[in-house]
Image 1 (spheres, one colour):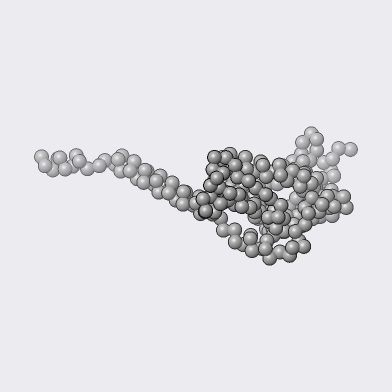
Image 2: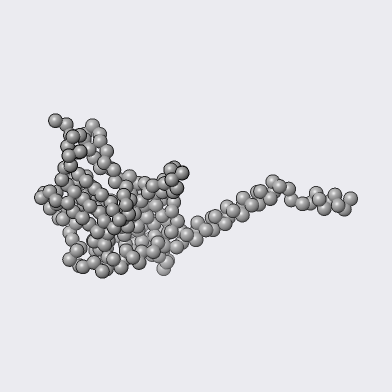
Length: 230
């Protein structure tokens, strides 16, 4: 009788599975919170921007307009862009946390075909970063060829194309859907640089994002000419 009572008190297989799932969920949530709290390492971007000669900090609007008027390509290094952003951007944190949060800077990290726009903030004395991945695509419509900025950082893994990478919260890479949390801040940033965006992306025939460099070319290309109406 004692043996039967002992056997019946043992947890069943289903209970063990539920306990394991709960443990994994709590562990995963803890890891995610830890990664979100860890800011991206921006030391390389800051060092390159500070090492770049002051003369390389150019008035971006004038540089782009001259390239379009005279028809020559404009290569912009990651360091030049970040130095210009550091001199140009003046941010102001709003919302319910504005007393505890201050905006610090915007940084750009360039990789092959992908740009990452990083916002750096100070939250109650701690550095917090968030970012968004961007890709540039040329598409044809009834009005002709136009440039689109795609909020897509590519797949997390080649075998799982959906959902694509959207950006980062701290060091945690998040899916595209999480960009809804970041969109208001990036929309304000886009308004701040509306003229530069129009000149640098909508008026250029060719846009290439390379490792550490952005190349803008206003010159028409033969393959583009064949798509234009007679």
